[in-house]
Image (cartoon, rainbow, N blue to C red):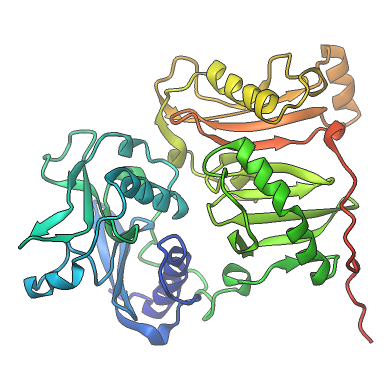
Length: 426
């Protein structure tokens, strides 16, 4: 069977480059073909369908295996579960510095950073091994395993496995074969019927530099430093995982930008924890997680509903009250000017009485209006007077997006003693 190997390798390197940061790997991106130590691509048969699988070993001994649209297997040279020579056990000996709970949370956080939003099956307690002990020595590893939650496979056949280094809080190995994580795989014709991917990844995808438009770079950096305390204050009020100190090094510059928007300076900054913070109209007005459903829509993506499915454990009323209390109690904002004394409008929500399915509540508060007022507004093509917009995970209850957008909250842009306009050159 003829497979466009070079095109698949280029696509695989792009895919793996996106995993370098979530896995905390000491690799420079974009990954280079010259540093690939092994690569194989082969067909996988699933009934009448034929899809591609690929395996890649990169400089440093890192293995990545691709299947069903994801990196479904990863391992380092320090993985205990794949170690074949017992004489090498001594080099894995160390000290346990992190608890089982911290290591499990690290694995889940890493999956989220890799783009997996449906982690409902991992809510079930896994079987746990570790730390590993031999000859009065300790290998600081926790190994987590989950069986098929639908009971279609025997208990010994694990559909998710992760090995976490309890000394350095780092993922050493994982395998994902559960249906919950699968996406659309590459067809066997990938790279043949479609134009091959570019030989080098687009610079935007791998940029490490802040994107700046309409203002000088000097001003953009000065603005970021000026608003860091406000970002930190917002995060402390919002709560975990944002209730930490925020420094310039906590900003992923390659995924951030500063520009003018509707006559006001706008900064959209990606934090290391995975959340995006938007500053506009003189204030932090929005924060959202990487796996927020509505944010993917706003960015022009078509998020797959299957990626946002899970058990429904939080009711509409609980989701609404959680956001209301956050805005009123933590942010100490007024109730009536923001229309929080009326019921919100739902854009998306699980069906009433549903116990499993699309697990996101997306809702907003707007100025109350009569049916006639609404018809007149629509006829004049005017948008609703929205004050607070939110998205809540119906499984965990986590707030995935919070936007405080009402004009009553606007403030003047900060005064920064740095030239704002970009240099026009000689």
